[in-house]
Each structure stands twice: as C-alpha cells, then as structure tokens.
Image 1: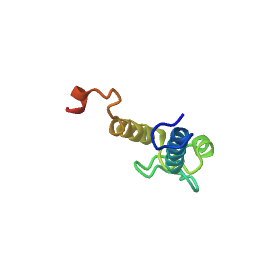
Image 2 (image 1 turned 30 degrees about the vertical axis):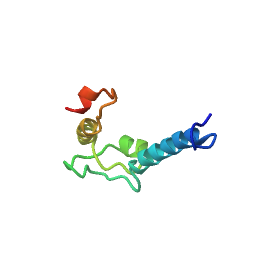
Image 3 (image 1 turned 60 degrees about the vertical axis):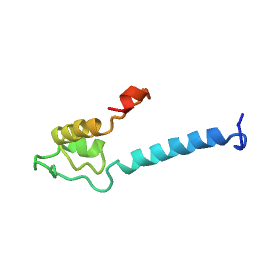
Image 4 (image 1 turned 90 degrees about the vertical axis):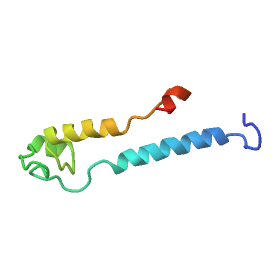
Length: 88
C-alpha cells in the first residue's frame, strides 16, 4: 500500500535496493586474487590452511583481527533516533 504520489510496491523496491547495495558493498570488501604467503603488515607467514580457507588473504589472523576491531569502531552510528542523542 503506497501513500501520496508513490506507486504500489515503491517502498519494497526501496528496501530491495538498499539490501542489494549492502550486499554489493560487503562483496567488494572481500579479498580477491591470489593469497599472499606473508602478511603485508607484519611479514609473518600466513598458514596454508588460512590461505586455502580465505582466497586472496593478505593479512595474518592477528593483523586482520586488529583491523576488524578498528573498523568496528568506525562503523557505529546512532540507531535510537532520539533528538537528545543526535545532538551529541
């Protein structure tokens, strides 16, 4: 049920487009190409099992964990939507 000037199904189309964009963004962040034998950050050997499990891997587990923790802090945003929390 659409309201105003929107056609029927417009809201679902917008939701589908948002999901497709999120999936494409996640896929673009996946490693591609040939895996490295040594971590590009610290130079430690990357185990064969990790290279086989994650094609295109470029970081050892320790460096990848550190990067993931750093990125987790950058992606936080206010989901509550209260006016007070938006002003901070």
